[in-house]
Length: 222
Image 1 (tube, rainbow, N blue to C red):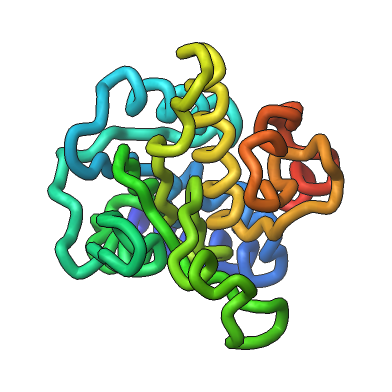
Image 2: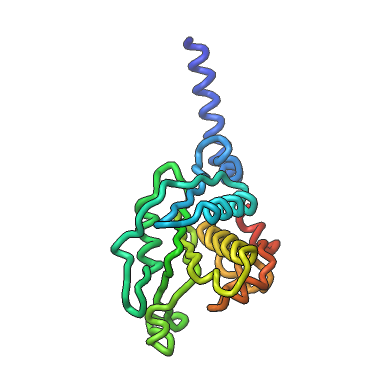
């Protein structure tokens, strides 16, 4: 028994030394040997269709090669509700709530809702609301992700109008994968065809996207 214990101790020291002197190896293999949780959880809020949850699940699995599970449905938190312009939910408040209530076993949570979500948009580099303030004080959006954080939120509310089911699901999947990309540390990309290109307040940007990461963005999260 002493010999076995000694061998285990030596192996543990050796493994620790490897990750100290080769930190990139830790990043690449940590998830495979249990050091880093990599599971993505889809958190449905309210009456989200199972077809939408399943579609987002498959898209994230395909794009990021991570295990994805669907969590039990929750009610939208009342603290995120607003009537500044319309009855809807503040995306930043919902994002914060989602991150704070993330299960420990989940690395990333994707809050998914069919309710409209909004944020306040400011002039670049300032805390001054963009003009016209009546519109940007509570501006409806498709999704919001916490760059380098642990959560993002996605709304299907603005994706249905005047399009086929096929186009709707393409939009939903692209937005979900875009927001997960932010959580993984990606910022908006200037390459127009890249999945991480900024929507610039238009669904047409999403429709024109290739739906995949450009080489630079893909390499950044390897």
